[in-house]
Image (cartoon, rainbow, N blue to C red; front, top):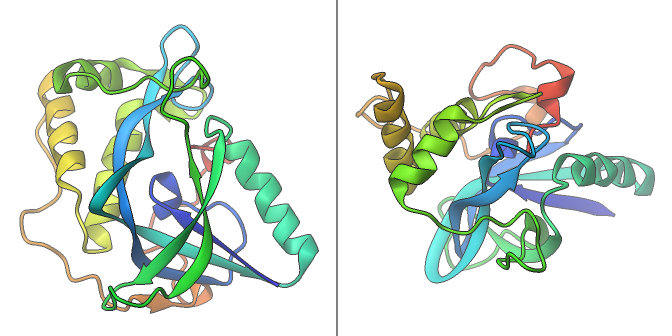
Length: 222
């Protein structure tokens, strides 16, 4: 058996579980949106953070990283148990086709698991829905939780997408609006970095961002 999961948020830079292979690529007909509440990692019940989820959108693509776990049912079970704890705000597990960078016609893997959320405030208590850019930026700029602040989540995602060579314009726009609220400068360099190899065994290159090991609380980030 082989277990695959697609990461489009913090999983892009910090999978947090043992994996055997990482592949840069995308899924079709979805886009990344900051419409999900986080009340136990980057925010609190009183002041929820905003984290990303996926919205169905015909013709769009969402770039990220797919992770493969090999080694039998026990290893897969451990990985899924970890992910279900970490992604507790997501109420759905969807199976999607994953396309490797450089081949948009034939799926590289079918049946890849992706954590998503029901876009309904009644049935899904974590769904915040869309909001004006300025309102989202103010919320992200001020939210803070046990795993850190909300703005760092956004900035790390912006950097992670830059490092794989596939920036998301909506993430850049939101990050720049948060910087405006905070009165700071920054952002990824204007010159796009080459993504390099797109099919790399994780053991050969554990972290494209070369981040220091994250503390245990951060490893549960959603």
